[in-house]
Length: 402
Image 1 (tube, one colour):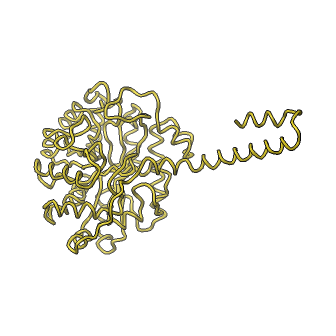
Image 2 (image 1 turned 90 degrees about the vertical axis):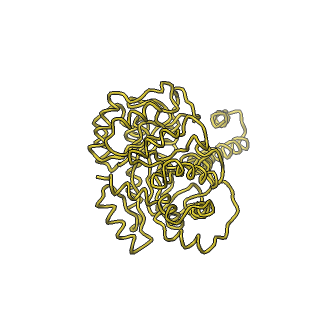
Image 3 (image 1 turned 45 degrees about the vertical axis):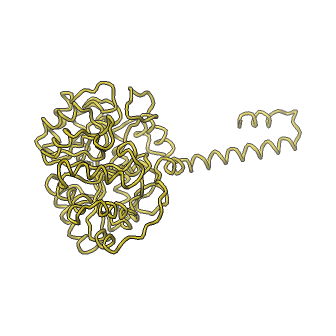
């Protein structure tokens, strides 16, 4: 359309008044495109990361007192993919540091997403278009990250470090000693919060074994074997091959054990999960998942897998989105949590929200008390709720971080 305007402007047959009108129209159109370009990241964020509308609840004193006493932690948030400055508060999306404090969230695993098919379904063929590429362009990521999964992860980790620098009461945890120091500070000041860095999908390694150590040095402490497609390390639950770990994948698992890097089996093929459990000498987790007992699909864990993960000291993080829990409210989350507890006990269940993961969830991080209340109403004891809401993650990290 702008080209048509410019052609008309150059056409000497047009009178001055017409040229003036066309010039104004062209400038307005160009201005609109500029505004759209700069506002598009916020529009995309608002559309992808929504909250189901729910009525405000008035909680009993028991709920409020219990909730404020909890150490709350979550295994999975993709907030670094957004264009939000997490040190500031927003009304869109699910997580920022201000809302973490409002919801009494103490510790959040911030995961980096580096490649996603344009149309995500529970069963994907090999994709030919990467949805992160246009997102990187409109958010003005550095050029080296446009087509490199490795540098996309590095860039997102740098964003988190910048946000942490802007918030003097936010810590980035990379070791047991740093976690212990943070816990000591939080005991004195509930405004103290913390985050860790994780990665969704071993395709981030770009097939290079040496990239694992580079990512560890950059502060990453968790890595999942696959995301929405098969890669050089493992088959995906959504992929075509359904294959297990490759030879490189087996080397990666052993190296992660040596580094004390947390192994996440979310999205991994069933054969891949079994391979990980056979090879790893350390407990593994599923950072964000549902369970087939309440929501039967290829993405979710079977009873057998849940028991094997728990039997090796691992943790199952229950996600909050519809694909995982087959529901749109907090009761669906609680149903999945209770089902898992009934299988393996409360010490192997945790939160794995998938906040800001291009999903719609029942509440954002500032309303975690909705989950505390729902667990109480379902009959869970204070001790069980404390484990589920964060103590299990705290214990796992204290035992397994370097």
